[in-house]
Every structure is written in structure tokens, then in C-alpha cells.
Length: 404
Image (tube, rainbow, N blue to C red; front, side, top):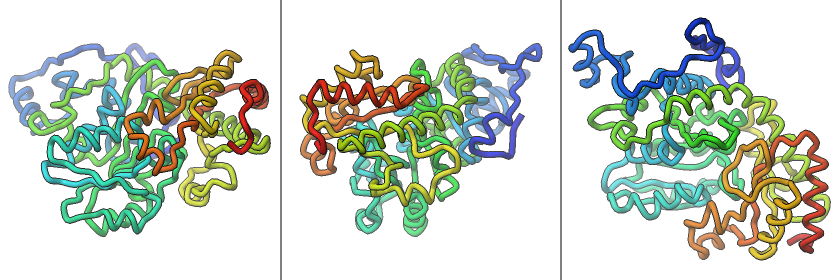
């Protein structure tokens, strides 16, 4: 059952009744689907008939159900799910761009996205200019007659810079660009389409799934764009083959139902721990702290009730200290020395040597990414004060300098 609601309100308002009146929707595990007539089959392949499933690389009923739920959450006309977040990003950019086109992108983005734009897409004639997208003059100056896409993350990885989506949307409109926003860090917290974004991408692997047991992605956009992705002759989703398994789609759909509760708790815990570390004299970055330079921009875009997110950083001063602290925290049971985010237990990694390692050390330094920067995805611990105390004990153990 579809709903006219969006955001958190949409998540629990949908009733997807399964076979035999099951309260969990049925899972379609077929790789191919039968047609009533040969004409239905040929029309579906020609793209002149909607509503039929033909092959699971194209879509499945279960994937379609998940996509509809995510479209409702983001307030988009439609959505299409993928086998990974990078699969979603790659499909979008190749669908929008052809040889000799140009992209303007935030300089602080996920390392995999950076490598795609910097190293891979130029092989196909698509070049990218990386800029500080919080500097609107720099964004405008980077646009050329060949620019097709303006790309950013709502909250950047790993520096937690905040994009002014409304301002970027105005620039995109003026120059007839497509504004693509990766909203992986801020599901429910920010609704980019409401602020003018044309396409919203998520790595479903992270907060939306929340259990670190599946890899998936989604594109939320117009009906026309999602249809173009599935076109049997020209669709990047269809032809690149980044297909999400129906079993995983069903699992993610179940986990989606608890996302509002989880995001609220992630934010509460992160704020408690970030504030405590800052008060203890350590160099912390968290969008909910008063000294975060993007706090005002974030607050004008925030949806009520979900706080400032579950991501924070701590600058240990050096990679040696960062590694020692992370190993001590894992030994103490704070969480896992692991990449990714959105898990029920805290995850931490030194971004410069892990998720941002595709970016050269020189470029990392230019953007302010120090080698000792630890990115935390704060978990769902019942008592964050106890987690904070454990972290402080580990900091003392490795003799981390205050104000590092």
C-alpha cells in the first residue's frame, strides 16, 4: 500500500501484507518471470509496457517494494535499488554523462567515489573538478559550458562538512545542471529533494540497513530518470548489472522500519560522547557542537527529531597514536576497528589510511584530512556515558595529548 506521507512518517504508515496475510511481505526469489502473452514480453522489452517483471537484473517485486518505500522516505517520485552504493553512484553518473562532459564535485567525498571520478571516468572522456562545495563562489567558478552534474554529499565523508543544498540547487538551476546528493550519512535528518536536489543516493549498507550484513544502494529520483536507468538498451542499471538480491532487499526493508528509532539513538549517543571528549580537552568534530562551522547550515535543513547524526571525528595527532588508540578501544570493548558506519556497535577507522586512501596524501593535507583523524560511527549503546568513560580510559592509556 502506497502512502502520501514522506520522511519518517512514511516508514511505518505502509502496510505490505504478504502471502497468506503474513505481516511481513513475501519474497520473490525468481530470476525470471513468465508472461501471459508473447506480446506482453516483446512490449516489455521494447519499453512500451509497464508493470511486468521480466528478469531480476531489471527488477523484482521485492526490490520494487523496497524502492517504493525509499522513494516515499525521500519524497521522490520513484527509486531504484542496486547491489551496492557504488553501483548506484556509477549508474547515475554514467546515465547522466557522455564523453567530453564535465562534473563539479565536492573535494571531500567517499574515497571510492573520488577514485571513480578522478581515475576511472576520465577513461571515458568525463572529467571532474573537485572544489570546496561550502564555497559557493568556488562552485560557480568551476562550472564550464561542458558541465552536466553538480555532485556533493549532504554531510561529507570524513570531514563532516555540511552542504547547503538549497544554495547548490539554485546554482544548478541557473546553469542547467543536475544536482546529485549522496545522503548516506544523514537519512531522515536531511531531505535533499525538499531542498532542490534532483537525485538522491544512499549506500543502504550503512544506517538504513543498520546491521552490517548486506551491501546495497539506492537512487531516488523522478519516474523518468529511474525508468531510463532500467532501459534495456540504454539503462546503466540494466546494463552494468549491479543487481540487489531479493533476499537482501527483504532484509533491508524490515530493518528500515526501525530507522527512525535508530537514527535518534545514534545521534543522542554521538552528541553525548563528542561533547564529553571536547569538554575533556580533545580535538573533536561533530555537527551538533557549537564550534562546528557547518552547524547553522545543517540546522536550517534538519528534519525535526533526529539530532545531528551518528558520525564524529577525533584527531589523535598522528597515525601512530590513532592506531594505538583504536586498538586499545577494540580491546576494551568500545567497538570495532572497522570501516563502514550505521552499525549497532561503534565502528572506528583512520580515514586517511582506509576509506579515503584513494586520495593522495598531498590532497588529503590540502583538504584538512590529517593522518591522525579517527572517524567514529557511534553505536546504539544504552548508556553512552559508560562508552565515553571507556574511550577516555583508552585515551589515557595511549597518552593522547589534549588538543591534538
